[in-house]
Amino acid sequence: MATVELTTENFDEVVNGNDFVIIDFWADWCGPCKMFAPVFERSAETHDDIVFAKVDTEAQPELAGAFEVRSIPTLAIVRDNVLVFQQPGALPENVFEDLISQARDLDMDEVRNSVK
Picture 1 (tube, rainbow, N blue to C red):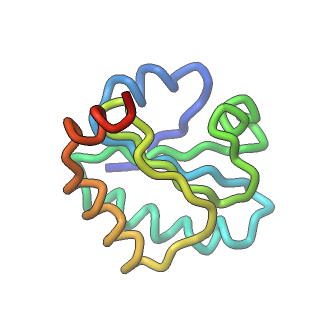
Picture 2: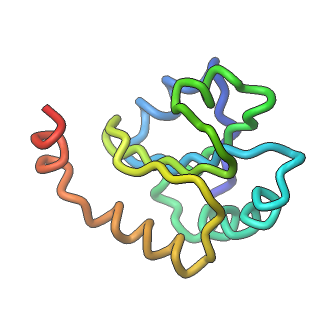
């Protein structure tokens, strides 16, 4: 599946309308962002049950602010409308795939109960 450009206009539809969304906050001038982009794209093609979304922090400062992004790239994972992971830094492909597996294995009932 191709990645989705996430904007303030489509955020609710994309994030609230899907069970599993991985968000890459990036900027065109960011070297580590450019290095991580192919890893993100390959994973998007591999995991067709997950929405892979990209936020251009220069074009969408409101979204970057809402997620309190202070460094890019930053990854965020939202499962069932719950932010379950957020971390700055480009990840090697094997680490990113392991992160996806861990997020997939989460017991979301347990997660929801822990954030109440």
